[in-house]
Image (cartoon, rainbow, N blue to C red; front, side, top):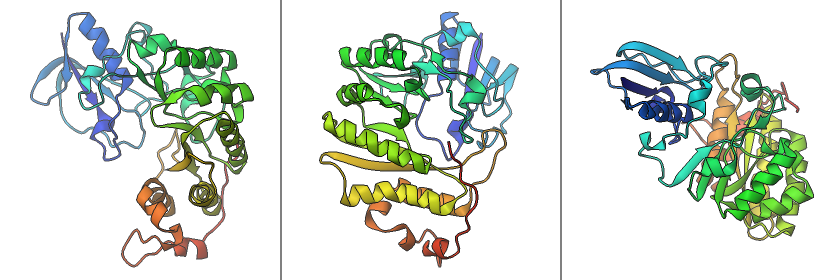
Length: 328
């Protein structure tokens, strides 16, 4: 059979070079069956086309394809869609993405999450947290691994086992979806300080209470010898002042009061409803751009940022309206 693949998110302006693991596993399965697999072209005929979409805000693919069967899957199409077990069990074939770094593995040690954050689809889609693949299986012989777990530390015994294996295997890893600082015990801090991170150790800092927890963990990591970057994912909820203060806390800490050899970096994400697509507010887009462009937040205060002609962000402070503040 001739199989065509379509990564709908890749066509979006929001796309960053990142493999769709479902498509990688589909490619792996069909190649094991002797089928030909390629990215779908409009002028070709295919027995089956698989269209994958992760985000509900990604625009639809309006192209017309010539195929006997078209299968659409992923959270962007159906929040409850999953791969059949016989495909999910396959090693992902990352070669279908020639633009990603070679010699790097991508995968999950766990699936699901016990939290119910209003901006996150994982608990709805995947349910309770549970072990998934062992790090040795995910690494598949590579020394660099991108781990996309949503809350590994919520499985403390399993997480201890996997972190110890990561250290013993001398892997470089990235917990790409962040760790929960609230779950970092002294024992976890000792292990995390020994892990070799590809770029940074990442934590979520989505509420005011999490600032204190992240500060607690940073202090422990520094005491146990961690040196490098601490990266914070920060959700932008409907409360401008709270969102700004939470991000500015880490920006000012980076500028004026950080531990030696540790750097703080924030990445702001406007709130996205996991069920019903919503359009971010303009202040969320402006604050995210200022935060995520390091040269901007390093060189100027947000109030001095001018994202558009005849508009300066100090207006957000004079006209701010307090609204919803999500607390978890």
